[in-house]
Image 1 (cartoon, rainbow, N blue to C red):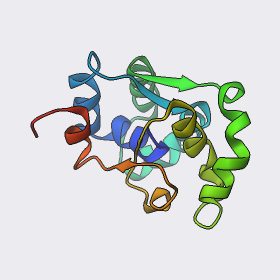
Image 2: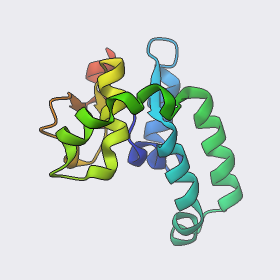
Image 3: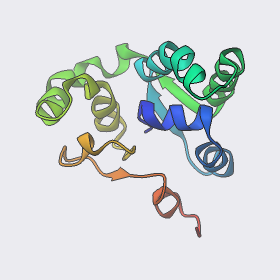
Length: 136
């Protein structure tokens, strides 16, 4: 279960993309549809800051969409009340990530400390390969 910040790292970096590609046949990766929308919305400003071609960034996000399944809100919206309770003190706007994690009984791959303490396991890019069964 990927947070939006991990999708951003997949678009603009190498390591996250490499992990996704390495484990694409061993694990299923998911992210709420709104995370993809957020990344798409922020690509122009992030591209400008990083001197990166925004059209290329959109294309890379499309490729990431082949590795990460976007979960439609209609599937996770029933988990909204519980998810909001768990994340309300940190960042209530992140409820979709918690909701999908609860729905799928999956940990969250994130660099955002707001998810710590929600009762959902979290992994960072530095440690997610341990969860995925890799040797790095």
